[in-house]
Image (cartoon, rainbow, N blue to C red; front, side):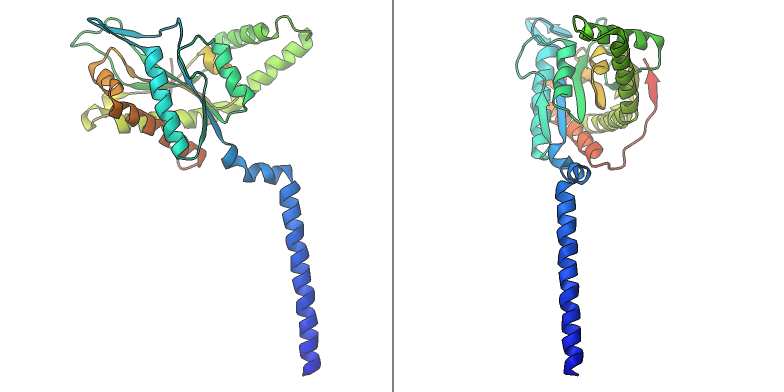
Length: 287
């Protein structure tokens, strides 16, 4: 009997040793494997770049009422800061392309996101309708993704890429390779951009509209050829989060509570996208 216990004891010691070796191997594999390491650090490295549209000499949309003037460039920065606060409260890293009122080219905006290898790029804007009247004042929210399916988009992409390559030592062949790779990147990001756009549109309409206005304010997800989206190497959307010329939208956006509502809606949509929660699918229209 004692021999049996001794044999069992030795067996357990060997098993324990084997388990320890196996555990050590797993730990070494995890810590040294770039693939596993990337997966484990994905959450901590997730980065959102928010681009407050316009700035500096570019005022964007302007609404005037008597001596009062509301500019899109100021409002995008204010709301972008609110979105950043909401995201940071969720432990999501966020960078703004501009933190003050300054000129910033379209290429500079996406270059910031590309250099930082961001996981998503959001360009924030507000609409305006020049011929608004009391009885005819369009309002609501629309979210855009890039339309890369037309000849016009291909020509515009080529023009942008050629501008970037201008003055460099790259030959024509390398230039063509860069253009093809950029085109492939844009196409690869399109499905994720659509998911993100649908999530943002759905959240924004629900969280900033009264029940009776939800259908009216939902202007949908659309595809258009925005140059600022052409430059991004990651899922990207352009948000038109309301009309300055519309009384309901303007009142919402000028109030502190309204700005927080917009910020919470967008940050919640980003959180949904980041955690791969079930996102509402939606129809995408070409603009």
